[in-house]
Length: 316
Image 1 (tube, rainbow, N blue to C red):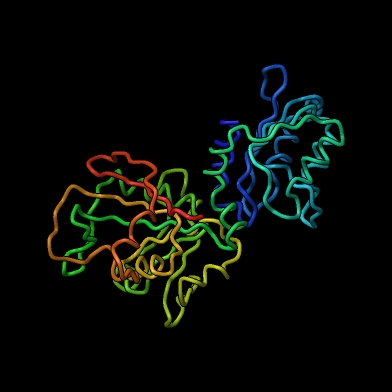
Image 2 (image 1 turned 90 degrees about the horizontal axis):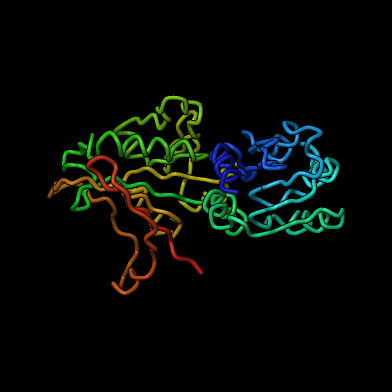
């Protein structure tokens, strides 16, 4: 299942509105087929793996990160039917599909066809990998990740606005990796006017994974960019599972104030700036007690001289 999850990562940021599923087909200790959801959501991971495995799929074990789809679609056959037709012997799935069109129906049909099904193996890893899709199913919008690069005293720029570069090359390379996992990346009008950012992925081999670009503004749209007039417009975005908000403090404050940030990436450089531009402005808090218990610390790592801290919003 760990290998299936790793395969699914290849589709993250490219498979929306479908989940980035990974699939591995094994028999007698030998891998017969590998697959992951392709750009735009088709073909599905199971279809790719089955095609690679061919006739050897019969009586094989299928490891898949999400319950095989069971609903009909004009875009192609459902994966449950493909697995039954291939005559696989066993299906191990990490998660039940929350999409109401499938939600347990795939498992029911597989078992009715005499195929053994096990649910739950590797569930935590699969949830992390497909967090954007799961957020869309649960909340009706993409998962929103806020990225902040700041000094030790929480500043993102000098008073003059100069901000290149607060963090080092290793941290900036990690940001590009995060961009490659996003369907869309957003900045505010102020950041756009000041920096004219490219917002592309400049890691060798991943240039083709650059996300679509969006701008938060109540003013005129920018050609080639998606315009959001307010953070709540994320509910109207189509084909977006993962939205990365990169800046600046106005956009960050707006999304935090609207309680639409699900994950924060804080890149903290070992420098002191003093007077300068703060990373976040007013976000609507009126009592200090309301600030506690909202964020769960998930991980930290060193990226050269800089430290990355990852937090996730605590939601019931």
